[in-house]
Image (cartoon, rainbow, N blue to C red; front, side, top):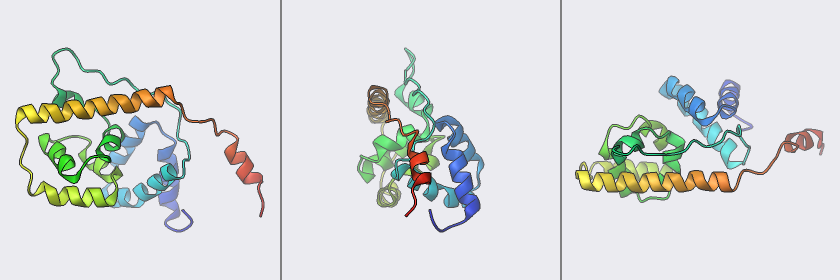
Length: 172
Protein backbone atom coordinates (compact mmCIF):
# COMPACT_ATOMS: atom_id res chain seq x y z
CA UNK A 1 0.00 0.00 0.00
CA UNK A 2 3.03 2.25 -0.06
CA UNK A 3 2.41 3.50 -3.59
CA UNK A 4 -0.76 4.40 -5.44
CA UNK A 5 -3.41 7.04 -5.19
CA UNK A 6 -3.85 8.26 -1.60
CA UNK A 7 -7.54 8.93 -2.28
CA UNK A 8 -8.04 5.32 -3.34
CA UNK A 9 -6.26 4.13 -0.19
CA UNK A 10 -8.46 6.34 2.01
CA UNK A 11 -11.58 5.14 0.22
CA UNK A 12 -10.50 1.51 0.57
CA UNK A 13 -9.83 1.95 4.29
CA UNK A 14 -13.25 3.55 4.77
CA UNK A 15 -14.96 0.73 2.83
CA UNK A 16 -12.96 -1.90 4.74
CA UNK A 17 -14.25 -0.44 8.01
CA UNK A 18 -17.87 -0.96 6.92
CA UNK A 19 -19.77 -4.17 7.48
CA UNK A 20 -19.85 -6.45 4.42
CA UNK A 21 -23.33 -5.47 3.28
CA UNK A 22 -22.67 -1.72 3.43
CA UNK A 23 -19.23 -2.16 1.88
CA UNK A 24 -20.72 -3.98 -1.10
CA UNK A 25 -23.36 -1.28 -1.49
CA UNK A 26 -20.67 1.40 -1.57
CA UNK A 27 -18.60 -0.61 -4.07
CA UNK A 28 -21.66 -0.99 -6.28
CA UNK A 29 -22.11 2.79 -6.31
CA UNK A 30 -18.56 3.35 -7.60
CA UNK A 31 -17.93 3.45 -11.32
CA UNK A 32 -15.69 0.80 -12.89
CA UNK A 33 -12.58 3.02 -12.89
CA UNK A 34 -12.97 3.87 -9.20
CA UNK A 35 -13.55 0.20 -8.35
CA UNK A 36 -10.39 -0.77 -10.26
CA UNK A 37 -8.40 1.60 -8.05
CA UNK A 38 -10.01 0.59 -4.74
CA UNK A 39 -10.32 -3.22 -5.06
CA UNK A 40 -6.56 -3.99 -5.07
CA UNK A 41 -6.15 -2.04 -1.83
CA UNK A 42 -9.11 -3.87 -0.26
CA UNK A 43 -7.60 -7.22 -1.30
CA UNK A 44 -4.27 -6.20 0.19
CA UNK A 45 -5.92 -5.28 3.50
CA UNK A 46 -7.60 -8.70 3.63
CA UNK A 47 -4.40 -10.50 2.61
CA UNK A 48 -2.52 -8.76 5.41
CA UNK A 49 -5.14 -9.96 7.86
CA UNK A 50 -6.20 -6.49 8.93
CA UNK A 51 -9.56 -7.09 10.56
CA UNK A 52 -12.66 -5.26 9.45
CA UNK A 53 -15.69 -4.65 11.62
CA UNK A 54 -16.79 -7.52 13.79
CA UNK A 55 -20.35 -8.00 12.64
CA UNK A 56 -22.05 -11.31 13.31
CA UNK A 57 -22.66 -13.26 10.12
CA UNK A 58 -26.21 -13.33 8.88
CA UNK A 59 -27.81 -16.70 8.61
CA UNK A 60 -28.36 -18.20 5.22
CA UNK A 61 -31.81 -19.72 5.16
CA UNK A 62 -34.06 -20.78 2.36
CA UNK A 63 -37.77 -20.31 2.66
CA UNK A 64 -39.74 -23.51 2.44
CA UNK A 65 -40.74 -23.22 -1.23
CA UNK A 66 -37.86 -21.00 -2.33
CA UNK A 67 -35.78 -22.34 -5.21
CA UNK A 68 -32.03 -22.54 -4.61
CA UNK A 69 -31.52 -20.09 -7.48
CA UNK A 70 -33.65 -17.49 -5.70
CA UNK A 71 -31.78 -18.00 -2.43
CA UNK A 72 -28.38 -17.61 -4.12
CA UNK A 73 -29.55 -14.34 -5.69
CA UNK A 74 -29.93 -12.91 -2.17
CA UNK A 75 -26.32 -13.63 -1.15
CA UNK A 76 -23.63 -10.95 -1.11
CA UNK A 77 -20.53 -11.00 -3.30
CA UNK A 78 -18.07 -11.89 -0.52
CA UNK A 79 -20.18 -14.86 0.57
CA UNK A 80 -20.28 -16.15 -3.00
CA UNK A 81 -16.65 -15.41 -3.87
CA UNK A 82 -15.19 -17.57 -1.08
CA UNK A 83 -16.62 -20.91 -2.30
CA UNK A 84 -16.22 -19.92 -5.97
CA UNK A 85 -12.50 -19.34 -5.41
CA UNK A 86 -12.16 -23.08 -4.74
CA UNK A 87 -14.03 -24.13 -7.90
CA UNK A 88 -12.77 -24.83 -11.39
CA UNK A 89 -13.09 -22.12 -14.02
CA UNK A 90 -15.73 -24.19 -15.82
CA UNK A 91 -17.82 -24.48 -12.64
CA UNK A 92 -17.55 -20.73 -12.00
CA UNK A 93 -18.62 -20.06 -15.60
CA UNK A 94 -21.57 -22.45 -15.23
CA UNK A 95 -22.73 -20.81 -12.00
CA UNK A 96 -22.47 -17.36 -13.56
CA UNK A 97 -24.62 -18.56 -16.49
CA UNK A 98 -27.45 -19.76 -14.25
CA UNK A 99 -28.95 -16.27 -13.86
CA UNK A 100 -28.22 -12.55 -14.00
CA UNK A 101 -26.81 -12.40 -10.47
CA UNK A 102 -26.79 -9.01 -8.70
CA UNK A 103 -23.42 -9.91 -7.14
CA UNK A 104 -21.71 -11.28 -10.27
CA UNK A 105 -19.32 -8.41 -11.03
CA UNK A 106 -18.32 -7.84 -7.41
CA UNK A 107 -17.84 -11.55 -6.71
CA UNK A 108 -15.70 -11.96 -9.85
CA UNK A 109 -13.59 -9.00 -8.78
CA UNK A 110 -12.84 -10.83 -5.52
CA UNK A 111 -11.70 -14.03 -7.29
CA UNK A 112 -8.02 -14.72 -7.99
CA UNK A 113 -7.02 -13.15 -11.31
CA UNK A 114 -6.13 -16.45 -13.01
CA UNK A 115 -9.46 -18.04 -12.08
CA UNK A 116 -11.38 -14.94 -13.15
CA UNK A 117 -9.65 -14.90 -16.57
CA UNK A 118 -10.11 -18.64 -17.07
CA UNK A 119 -13.77 -18.44 -16.11
CA UNK A 120 -14.32 -15.63 -18.60
CA UNK A 121 -12.71 -17.65 -21.40
CA UNK A 122 -14.73 -20.73 -20.38
CA UNK A 123 -17.91 -18.64 -20.40
CA UNK A 124 -17.81 -18.63 -24.20
CA UNK A 125 -18.02 -22.45 -24.21
CA UNK A 126 -20.54 -23.01 -21.42
CA UNK A 127 -24.25 -22.98 -22.17
CA UNK A 128 -26.91 -22.07 -19.63
CA UNK A 129 -27.26 -25.10 -17.35
CA UNK A 130 -30.44 -27.18 -17.36
CA UNK A 131 -32.81 -26.25 -14.50
CA UNK A 132 -32.02 -29.41 -12.50
CA UNK A 133 -28.28 -28.84 -12.85
CA UNK A 134 -28.70 -25.13 -12.02
CA UNK A 135 -30.57 -26.05 -8.82
CA UNK A 136 -27.84 -28.56 -7.91
CA UNK A 137 -25.11 -25.95 -8.47
CA UNK A 138 -26.99 -23.37 -6.41
CA UNK A 139 -27.69 -25.87 -3.62
CA UNK A 140 -23.98 -26.71 -3.45
CA UNK A 141 -23.12 -23.00 -3.38
CA UNK A 142 -25.61 -22.40 -0.56
CA UNK A 143 -24.17 -25.35 1.41
CA UNK A 144 -20.64 -23.99 0.98
CA UNK A 145 -21.78 -20.52 2.07
CA UNK A 146 -23.50 -22.00 5.14
CA UNK A 147 -20.34 -23.91 6.08
CA UNK A 148 -18.28 -20.75 5.67
CA UNK A 149 -20.66 -18.82 7.93
CA UNK A 150 -20.73 -21.63 10.49
CA UNK A 151 -16.92 -21.68 10.58
CA UNK A 152 -16.85 -17.91 11.10
CA UNK A 153 -19.17 -18.26 14.09
CA UNK A 154 -17.34 -21.29 15.51
CA UNK A 155 -13.90 -19.71 15.20
CA UNK A 156 -14.13 -15.95 15.59
CA UNK A 157 -11.26 -13.77 14.47
CA UNK A 158 -8.59 -13.21 17.11
CA UNK A 159 -8.69 -9.97 19.05
CA UNK A 160 -6.12 -7.70 17.48
CA UNK A 161 -7.22 -4.50 19.13
CA UNK A 162 -3.76 -3.79 20.54
CA UNK A 163 -1.95 -4.59 17.29
CA UNK A 164 -2.15 -1.09 15.83
CA UNK A 165 -1.03 0.50 19.10
CA UNK A 166 2.02 -1.77 19.21
CA UNK A 167 2.79 -1.02 15.57
CA UNK A 168 2.54 2.74 16.07
CA UNK A 169 4.85 2.65 19.10
CA UNK A 170 7.42 0.55 17.27
CA UNK A 171 10.35 2.51 15.89
CA UNK A 172 13.15 0.96 13.79
